[in-house]
Length: 456
Image (cartoon, rainbow, N blue to C red; front, side, top):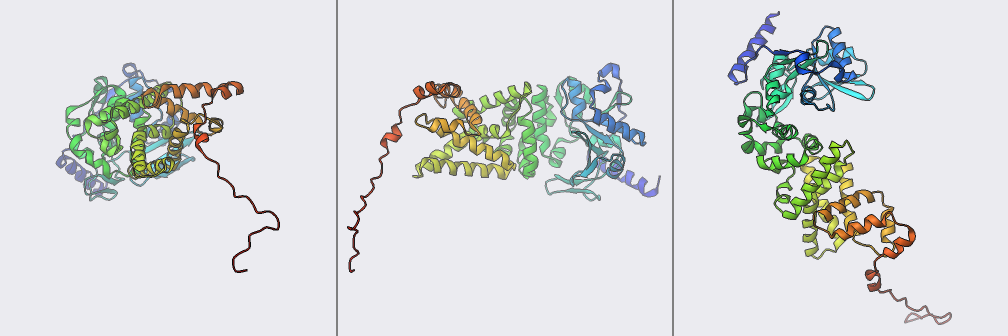
């Protein structure tokens, strides 16, 4: 070992002791007969990646959420790999791969339609170390300090996410007693909770999401700092916050997650209006119903529209802004458009909701007053609208929550499937049309009797 490598290791050890990080310990090795995860349950791409790295002489493991979910009996959505190989070395082994990221340099290895994310073991870097950078609140901005597998385990967020599975031996390496916490359904952060939340405030949201997913609890010391550090969420880049929020809402446990967010005081930094919505009886019924239906669809493996879900979460704030605009004397439809624009602008600033979702949200909202019009040719035109189904489902939520009479949804449910004769009988009297007066046209002067301008 070179002298500078020894000095670097000594430096990291001293920093770790002084920073209060947990000391390294020998891992608990759990064999296949105890954990029951056969290598065939790992995706073929993840096996190919670990096999390729090990054949090249590097340590490589499936790590994190995939191992956790397999132990819980869930089917992982993706598989991540951790290795001692540096990004450039990983890139050299796999032809279809690319290095990404600034905050963390990672490698994406592609196998057909599947992509496996490969990270290099990370060390206990300090703010003054090359490749490591923090902001004034302690949040890590850049962290490309590499280390050992043991250090990498202690750098992970929660004990249940610091588990390493080796597909070649089918063994699990546990450095933090994560398997024991998993059995107790306990979310425990690794190291000092306040320091770890300052390094990455998103960990507070993850703690809530994992507790809801596992139907478990956040360990008291892990939970203690959350309320007074909740404001740090506002320092997280909006795009990253949106990504975490989407995971939470599409977890299949969104209703429980939102309730836990409110309990922990985290809802202000996620959806700024969510706390107001949940204090309104009608608004809370509507939101909870939308979340319950989303959870049901996720569990049944049915597609879910993020645009629809965000439209539901923000609908009652749009309603309030709409009424306020009308009170200022603005006509109903322009008032609705102003309310929609204001709400979307506020949320995009916090969450960076992509335009494709905000477009869906606005189209669903603008259909709602049109669905209350059931006379003339309007219903026929609405059936041809490309977003009719989403607007119709949204109307169903409004009816089921008590906001709109149930008869309105029942009428549309029948009208959309009825024949032409039945549809004609179902149309409501066109009171608006009867009130509209036709503009009288001035009689055109007879030929040869055109008016002559004065002074001709």
